[in-house]
Image 1 (cartoon, helix red, strand yellow):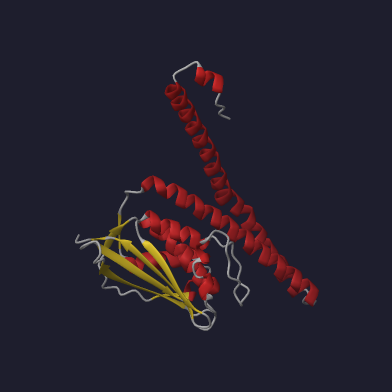
Image 2 (cartoon, rainbow, N blue to C red):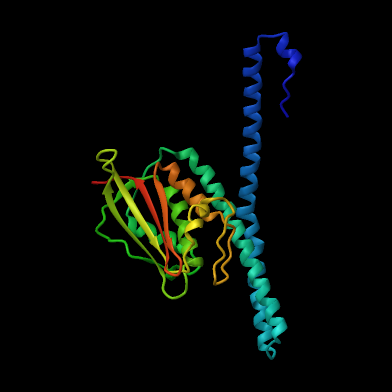
Length: 268
């Protein structure tokens, strides 16, 4: 740990000593940051392997019990609770991995990539949703290819799609639409506006701003689980793109999240 010695400062050039100590402190911070990143890598890459095995063997064990003549309600409840706990652990691991992605993405702030939005959204649905059919891609395929910071957008949409899948209600799937527009307040810069609309129970008006706070959760009526970090990470990723994210909701009707990010329309 870096310690600042007041006697050392008194006998030396104060500015030089402070600069040296600040440099040492920055090096120490960087070292801890590397340790943190390495820990997240271990969690995301290594912990998921035995967890996947546990989930598979638990399913086989449950199937064997059923083949041997069924199970009493008590045993069925045990397997159900075990499955729920495994799913909670999977969510935790994926959340840690996404946090790592946000952190790593900061190293590539200027990196732009050309994407076709409809195909890009389909890839994210399949990657982040357990039931991709719960999030329907209604994006107009005539929207031209655009250049943007795609890693940030992937992180944001991945978390938003996962939220819509979990908390969007069972009556009908969430829908994703998009359009290109210009921000008249800053001139002719093009913006991509993406809407994720679900038909869940909605969020009370006094909570719509709080949902972006870390670990804040609105308990869904369908018993869905989560850590309360999805919207926080989505907002961070969009802000890194110099974009903005907004949320509109009505209790009993559902929630719409609106993402707006600057893009370059590709002509090649």
